[in-house]
Length: 356
Image 1 (spheres, rainbow, N blue to C red):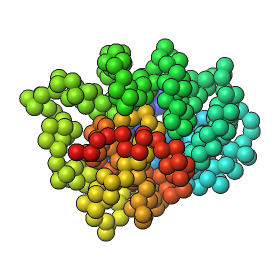
Image 2: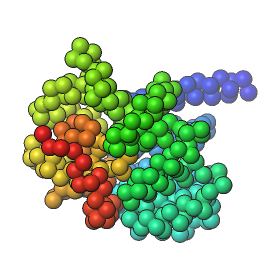
Image 3: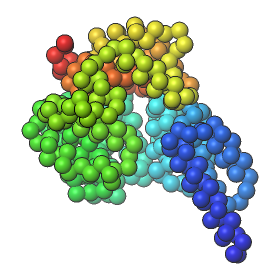
């Protein structure tokens, strides 16, 4: 027993190191091979599969990730795994399989959440709101408010979205809610934004995506307040705030694209200068309206790949409330977003900035 405990302890430390490397996009392909070899031994199998699942996603191997996630769900019957499977199918644009997987699964609150998420993605917002309403007073209520807020934002109802986020400020999702509220406040020029920033403790907030966004918002806010000077600039964003350069933006897009490896990539033959110019003229849809600086742009041709699936959609990050592009990357397979409905809603007021 002592030998087994010692071996398990060493394996656990080994897995934690691999997991941390994958989180930081280090040696992903090499670590996948290590994890696949570990599947043949009897210890920590479920932990290995979960880490391997994340590694497959990071490496763009979506089919293998899906098969592994379905295997985990078959073993655990954990409804949360169902939600992950549905989101994966939606992300690759396979709406029919996403709905079939929902319909074939037994009733649970997670099933309701997955179905509501599905209707949100296809633009059936009223149906999504109705379904999310069934999750009040359940264990998923907090997560429901986040998703319900996103639906309201897609509908352009900022006040209802803000009320939902406010309900989460004393919960375990307070930081995620603050990120959204800060984005709304910056977009709406709300004087309460400083108080919201003061409530956000960057040092204790772990979610990588939100952290990147909040730091970007904070730098932009300090800049417009005059608290950021040329003497204390640290990185790419700050340099672009003071002396914007299209050339530097293109270099950053190329470097970011190279770092991402197989997760997403542009077609080799595209001209990024042409893509940049097209995006600059088509910043019509502000993503979820919970950010002041990220847009969804539909290209007139296939632009690249997300997880090996062709896509004609791009996310474009700008300096807040301007059309000065910071980065561009492919997202979501064609058909995932109901683009026509988003245009119909005219989110963001169809260019909320003044062109300079």
